[in-house]
Image (cartoon, rainbow over all chains, first blue to last red):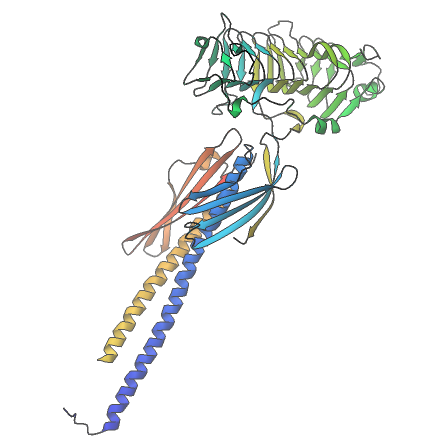
Length: 441
Length: 114
């Protein structure tokens, strides 16, 4: 059919107009599609990128928590709320660690976005997690209560009505472990003789030994796990002391027969401190009934130390360290030594690192009185430590040899040790971020 | 005829683009709400007061007129031992757009440093 066009030019103009209009609308549509598409992609990218960054950050923070538990292994690829992270870690100097964490969304294999952060942290070793630990044999007297974990490298002998409970509500640190593994497989490593009983006051605790545990019917506790011949890390032998004594001594003021009047007595001769004998067997003695303030100082005594009957210590914190001497006791607290007014505890670290002590490295006496003795700090004897009846110790108590606790003693674990005592590696303390930067994934 | 078809296609594209643009805009706004909340509250994650065991509504509002949203958080404590404690923080922003439920979720971890 032939169309009847009176004016062919008129028909051509409409076609050209239609084509131009189509071209114009197509261009506008295309531009709009591109613009909106870019905006949508940007929004989506923003979301994915943030998700990847948070995943990488989660990896770093989890690694920091692990470092505080002395776990310095890498973290394998881990799913994390629609993302994944993986962490690598390397030592970066003394107590320093370099952590690199990569976050992927939604997964490493199908990553739509990935980000990485590199963080350097300083982990300052913290106080050990046990209340009581000893390398030799230990005896816990009747009616005593330990608030925290007990560890030993030797035999533990329990008295009547001994209790273990957590050091603070919810902490769940009320277990007992010994690494003692005698050649004689029948030899007991945790001993509960006739009349003895040990009650775990917190549920889901452990009593573990590398060998035998005697008279298990005398143990009680809700959901208590009793493990003999245990070879887990819980029963690894401990190294003593936990404190970094080299670092501690580096900050200590040495007290000698030549300078003790200046350092301890403000120049006044033999008041309140005296020296029983200038020879090696001499003892620095704080006079009975007198007062002494440690004044926030670590003292390194090169003779034994005795706190006389009824002496008062405080109000400031301090450390008494004995590094040489020869006598019955390295450090002796005689009866009724007490904290200064307004204080519940004497706040003092007590360490005997060396010397020859015929009886004990450290002894706390109360004369059996009901008043009790209260000390908060780190207690360590390189050999034997003894606590009399009604001794109350808060902090960490360690003996490089035997430990004897008479009846009605309490030992409570605490991280709050006076003088910011330095600790050896192996216990997760506080973490400080040294640097934090984003790196290319 | 051709012009009509092209015009209809153009209008359709325009509508789709406007819809996509709105979605992107709401997503960006939801992103800002979630990230701002996390960053503003980061110093307080250690405080037990913020802890919850399930998603809990923090606040509600409007991304735009007629587009209400809800911001929820969940902060749970995990323990690797006596010292190794950390909190997992999860924040969810949800909104309804033209009858369709939308959400954005962000999660991270904050360790206890001392």
